[in-house]
Image 1 (cartoon, helix red, strand yellow):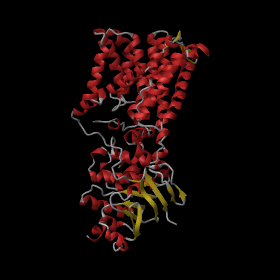
Image 2 (cartoon, one colour):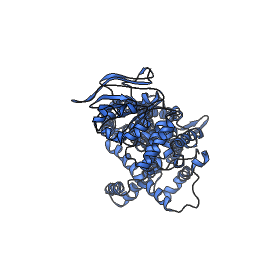
Image 3 (cartoon, each protein chain N blue to C red):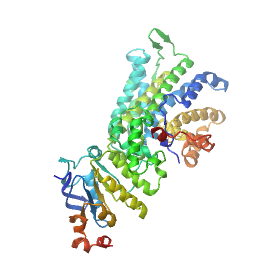
Image 4 (cartoon, rainbow over the protein chains, first blue to last red):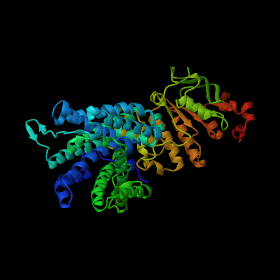
Length: 340
Length: 249
């Protein structure tokens, strides 16, 4: 069994080959999707969910903290974006900031309750808080629109100085989401291999030891939960723009479970890229399998079960295993030699 | 004044009294040993001294500062470092990262979210220097889980050393080691004794009597004897216990 720390980034490069590949694929997506019979909106969904899943995986894969109520922060971001547009100003940056801040504050408050817990108690509390937020979204009808959701959220134009681009077109919104995704990928990758990120991984591996080498473990757990909620809020704001509405459904236990499945299937436990693979796999399965049968979710569930039983490392682990089988032309340079 | 002192420590779990009025003191620059039969309370005593358990009564001081009741991370940052009887490593990563994480320089960078760890020459050099002390510099980039049992024991000590401790607690460092690995460990402790104050719990009496300047014997949750090894070898309490066999072997 390989692990996240088994595929570490040795060099200090800000941009890596997989990032270039991702950027190229994202650039070509608006042409690729129609070419294979799919639609533009799918690209937006995938970009949004990758941002959400990457943030979630900082918590789940990197720190080993099992949150099963994370959809709440996606929803909070969506509602905050919508409420800002309705009640404050029609502004892209203002809405994004409101979404990120609101989800971050909610995450920080919940994280403060969670961070001294571990294991099953941690997981159950995340579900509990997630359900509270979902319940509030359903019941605060005058604020959130209740079951009907918050409707009529506009897609404000992207304004950079005097330059302005309308995001009403799905292709434009996709590129905006893709640009944010690439920023999240670069910063996330950097963070995962920074001292902060390595302490998170140390906590996952051995919380007791992390404490005995001097780390205030609960503060790291709190910080990563908050960060993860912030990224969920960012994804939520894009979701509100994409759907032109915010709905309580994204805060449900079902949606929270979905991101867990995506990350596990993709291999988030063993690779930074796991969530990316998992999200793409889910949406492609939904649209391709969904085109063949109405029971596609059953088949996806079976794939998930098979993956957990046979390949718990997920798609990323499988790819890593395949790349290991190929003979190396020359040994990889060991950093120990560099340092010697 | 002793560098580290425990006074009148009591600890009970439910109705079971594990430590009863234990007082210990460890002088700077010495190797101190704690011995006693299984179930005597040695490990609980270590846990209390290093912050894993709070004492029910009594006081632990380090360099004149009260540390009893503080969480282990604060005690660790003050310069108290420990190894564990049951191996407690970061097993999903490479050997060098186990050590890097414990370095004060790494702790100082703990909130750096955009700096790349594995290209930080300062951290790498410091970690390699620590690994060199325990003979593991050549295995720095191997997976921690791939090390032999003896090397993992050495890595446990390296992680404790990396924190640049003022006092080093070693919990049964020879546990599970063969003769050759125990001999190498004894050499390591001899090398370290010039630089660190060391406290060891140990079952291997030959190992302990060879290395310790002073030994405390714990039985039934109490200190029943203490003194230099030569003096203890003739102590009636030590001789009456099965431990004495080893000391005279």
